[in-house]
Length: 462
Ligand code: ARG
Image (cartoon, rainbow, N blue to C red; front, side):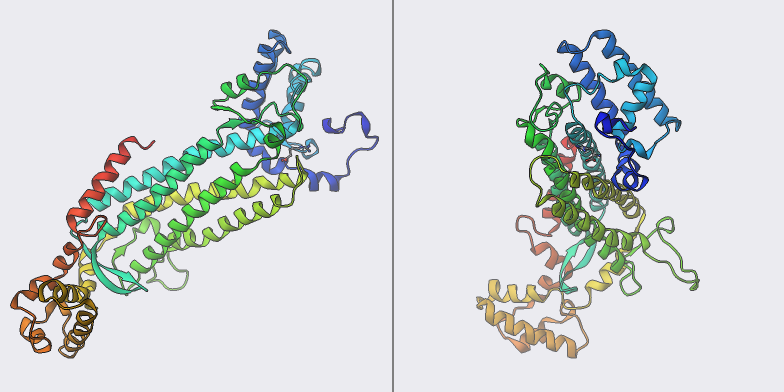
């Protein structure tokens, strides 16, 4: 008879119930957290005088044996044990005897046990994700440093808009990923509290020391209401949300990598190591990595909405619906971990085709705004009128089959006599990019300042 069925039941659970009810097939992933939590609980029970030293030592030693069995692949996972908590506890009792093993669950319930294990998993992975995000920002800054003078068309509506430099474009992404880093950081802090000792829902009559077990597990404190301790899954929602925003950023970048590596653009060439072929078209080199990054983002959003939906109607405290909280989180975490790793490698190894970027800048009259700005600042023309005159200049340039950056001062003067001979030096692509020197702008000095501030940040961001 499974441990959780106690003396109340006369019949064994049906196989159908076991396969429907059990979380073991997926929550076995939490074996380490479960064993860490149980060891801390046993030590706390001893410190509080609830277990003797011999009992606690036997339990902690037995849990280490269970851990070894699991890691050596010798542990037999039996679905009738329901979940990882029961499976570990059952094996512990087999190893050290039920007389002592049976004492581990004093002053504890699976409700606080699962809340603890899951929180430990989320916290651990929050740190890993944060550090992978940092690694990627480091990669972006490394590339940016070499490309402050690499011109490329800045776009709106995917149409050429104004010349920018490639470093500036990468820094836009670095800024997004920095916020992702900070989101993981703040969630970590907010959720750094142990629910262990909340017991089933109402606390426990045993003289436990929740702060002791929290400290042994590395938490900065304990949750302050037992009912909330077992019912709260905000920490899981937070990691799902944080990953969703992260994947949104990854997906936008992935989309650009796909566009940039197309024959029409050729701004970058993805390395062979991170490109795939076609089974029928021998010439093909496909950007499957960024496409999958873009595609996986959908799954991650689904996991967030899935958990919101599970939680929204639940009365306090624990309900079995909450067992549905784990798979989506595992999936999103694993998706984000591998996504960050492969994105980092693909970007690191991509070739940047500066000539193609520059060539693209010479089409689309990217410095047209600079002509309007020239009319405003040098000829005292109101901006709306300057906009109109510039439109005519663009039309003339098109007639001449020239880009606005190539047209002569004489041609422009035919359109508006107030234009001086010095105008052409304001219309070059470099001049246009460097004119945007406002704080956070694309000029080279402004881009260099942004790089410097990221480098400062990278020194302390851990
Ligand atoms: N397997 C359960 C879960 O994942 C553990 C908690 C079970 N608690 C209970 N009262 N049935 O949520």
